[in-house]
Amino acid sequence: MNEFRPTPERLIVGPVTEYCQKVTDAEGNMLVDIRGWGRLQYFKDGDKLQDKIAKWVVDAINEKLERDPI
Image (cartoon, rainbow, N blue to C red; front, side):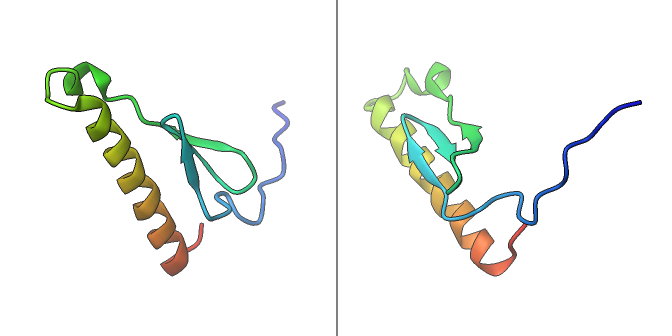
């Protein structure tokens, strides 16, 4: 029989942050790894676009958590 860990009160504790394209919650749990370099390497300033996408994702998650915590 499988033993499951207890479900926390909050699955994502905000605010979330990003460092080196890894998005983590306030407790240090990794949520997302932004990895778009394959496509972005063909665009001018692809590295800056990847950083911009990571910031956009963090902002979107934080905005959603304010309205509807999970």
